[in-house]
Length: 59
Image 1 (tube, rainbow, N blue to C red):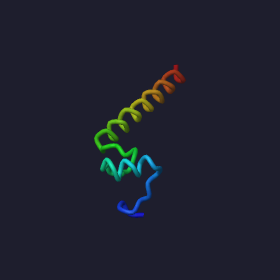
Image 2 (image 1 turned 180 degrees about the vertical axis):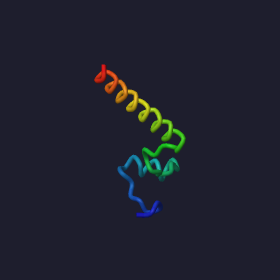
Image 3 (image 1 turned 90 degrees about the vertical axis):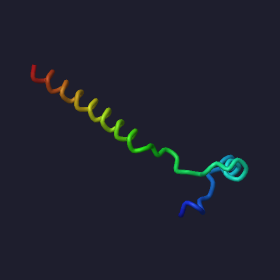
């Protein structure tokens, strides 16, 4: 399905597109810099938790 012939999810989205001129973009897609910040934050959180578990297991 191409971007131009997508069917609206519901009547509200159809109204927003036809009357108010809102584009129907892909929902939930973040910009790349924000996505990378999230990867770094969650990755570092996971590594710190794993490191903490390893250190507590060794002691």
